Length: 176
Image (cartoon, rainbow, N blue to C red; front, side):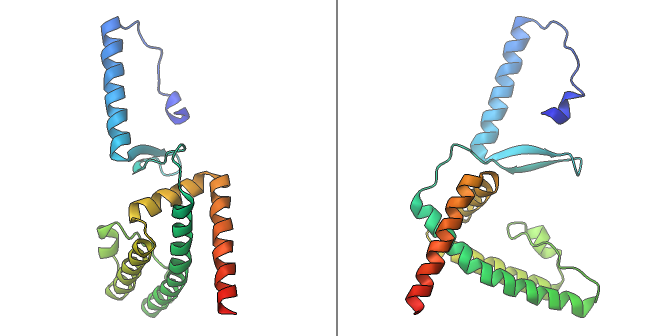
């Protein structure tokens, strides 16, 4: 909102009917955006308009969902590190100064733009990550909602961290 404040000028006195119709249009567009799960986001750093999933501060996640999320994260993290190393090796084979490209699993164009060897590793990573998420009784969409919420809410992030620690301690005691 602040980024747009500089371009808003003092309005002329609108008629009562035009205020009502504009309000209804804004309300309808806002409701449609929220119901579809997408909200526009303006990035000042890149000066671009980005559509991203809406994160609802009121949204509650059950203890079971948090536990499922933590188990999935622990499984995915090992896979992520392994895949990153494989992609890094592939990049270095092609160009010793190359960097690992960003991988966005839900963007086909992103995956298709990768070199064949890197694409194979990325697709395998994305497929297994989805399998781990769904194997822990979450949808990818719900997993992403939790990820967004924990990035925006330090208290929620702490709940997840505590669950990660609990699961890791339990796994260690089960192995001993």
